[in-house]
Image (tube, rainbow, N blue to C red; front, top):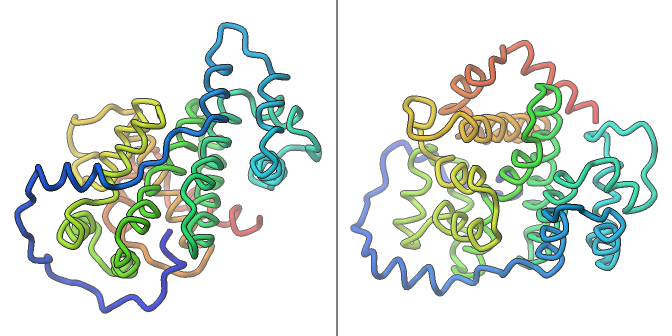
Amino acid sequence: MFNQISAAPPVVSHPLPSKPIDQSETRKLLSSIQIPPQPEIVIALMRERNSDEPDILKISRLISNDASIAAAVLKTVNSPFYGLNRKITSVQQAVSALGLKNIGSLVMGLALRNSVAVKGMDHYWESTNRTAEYAVMLARQLGLRNVDEIQLYVLFHDSAMPLLLQRFPDYLDTMKRIPSTPWIQITDMEDSRHNTNHVAVGSLLARNWGLPDNVREAIQWHHDTSVFDGIAVSNEIRTLIAVGHIADHIQEMTSRQLNECSWEVFGEACLKHLMLGETELQEFIDAAQEH
């Protein structure tokens, strides 16, 4: 997911020296990071989607009123990952085809990209969107019910990185270090350099945007290696994290730029949690490469 960043330094094979984190300083720093408010289109869409009798026509109009999001919705739903047997030509058709939950998750992800305007991050967002599409494909083939939460989690789990890049000009150098940093040291490395990390900021963003509890908790835990060892989180949260790591792995394999720091740590546990074998995983990778 970090393939757009080039010229990574040599692999860090030893823990980075840590410094004590001043909690009051950290809170002050977090308050200085510009967390974008939930966009009006998302607020209106979620309100209508959660009403007793959602109005598909009203939801379609809300999306259509934002030209950039409407165009992105049509482009996304007509991609091979959704496997629709006909071309979708209107937002109303897209809402009917995907359902209210899935269209809501899709619009929220598109609105996030529009809300965090950072130059030079196009490849990041494209990679994130592809990874979310792989996650949706995987979730549907596995018969998982919470496809909308899975999509939201994948779209948002690393979404704080552009925010940190806005706040810290040298965060670009931090991003360059991530592919060659052992997974368990990534947030420590961010803390050491910036006194905060993308998990902490991502949790704030998720809370401000009213993401489901499972999605917010999965964001908080997705760098913790104890997720699959104990009982700290629910099975649903483990599933979100597992699908996310596998989707990241598929993205790495299909892009042929292998920065597999998370897969080395989580891969075996993720496959075991979802009861997937290596053969089945390869079939998913092959299917993704065909699209």
